[in-house]
Length: 360
Image (cartoon, rainbow, N blue to C red; front, side, top):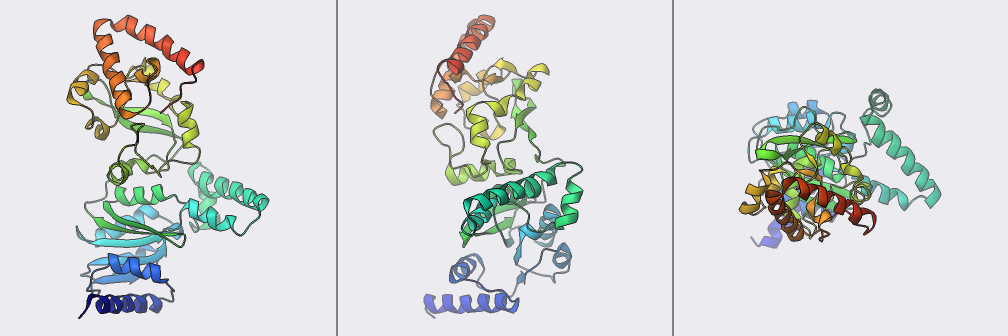
């Protein structure tokens, strides 16, 4: 049988199964699903559900799960993903879909005039996005909405999936809806307190390689920390030394970062004795692996700081310039620890105030 004929037969099988659930699908959706699904569909369980009860009652054995129920309508998202995880063996797949905040507002902006859209945006952002994160309002939010039509970013959904033991193998934006294909690789790894509020604590390497919790104002969507390796694998680093094309950033994130506002809570780390006002940036264990070994050894001898050396030395914000400035600073500090920090601290203030030096 020719490949083209086989492909058409598979498309017909998938379409028939989906139509059985009273769902209509476009040709583009069918093509993606055909690429993602195995040739033998007998072990694939096709669902249209947001209820974990239906996951628990799936007949076994199975090869994978295709669920057309939107993640936006799931009341307990992590619990649902964990139930899917428990139903699968390592290497088996789960395909689902969701509407991102960005696509939701693109859809509404086409239907509403600018004034009405602004009102809707403000109301939905405050009620559907902010209130579920505030103690006291959370219960009211779920009482009114029952967890349906939740505002979810692409970063949050994919981050939740990774935290629940999945590896992302495919993402496609089709007609304003994101489809994802993930593979089970482990048991759920989600911590007890994933970052979800405006003030977050990030695991960073401190002096002597000790892991410290660095305080910052949130500039990324919830669960973004679980996607660091995925983003690097997908896009690599930008010239600034940060992940390129990072969709995990909130719409206000770039502003907070540019004017250093997100780093103000690091003063808590300074008061705790874990950081200094001036010093090398506190970086993640993953980023630390990409630093030259010679600089790694120098870095571990000193506490990280709030203001990085490239600001004090008035260097560019590219990854190479930042690392070169850190090496120069640490070598200066080895010779004259006290005066180096005093001199460069005032230089950094001058560069920020009078030379308009901004965060990379």
